[in-house]
Length: 179
Picture 1 (tube, rainbow, N blue to C red):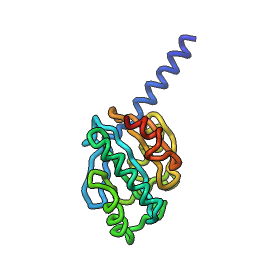
Picture 2 (picture 1 turned 90 degrees about the vertical axis):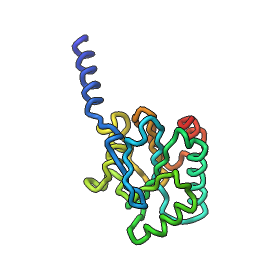
Picture 3 (picture 1 turned 120 degrees about the vertical axis):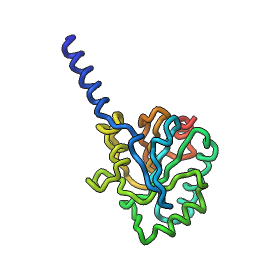
Picture 4 (picture 1 turned 90 degrees about the horizontal axis):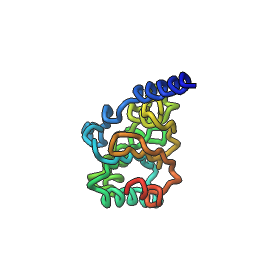
């Protein structure tokens, strides 16, 4: 029995040592700046897949993200990511940038469009490989399903939650995570 417990303990330690750090990753903003995740050590990080379709419902979602960031500006970094799988293209980049910036304050980081899903294989952005693969993040294995997916990283760099679009930004789940 002791051998089995020791073996399981070793496997757990080995799996944790294989996990990568979020702080080794970076994003390029829609304005062309490189932002290292290491710059956000000690802060909570919310990574959010942004909507591509401009409509009233998505305007409301963007305003909710903006409000959340403003209320928690000292402790929370919000990164919005448009996804190629959701319809992002270079031809609409400037329109989206103008739309996002008209609803999100400058403290919300908006990345260039990236491939976010595991089904994109080698094209999946390295940050999203980390976010969606428990072998890399050490805790959760959940793929992106569309706009509104949220990934919450704690102040120590650990992936704490992967939430689907049904979880509201202004809801109690998000509020409990951010508080």
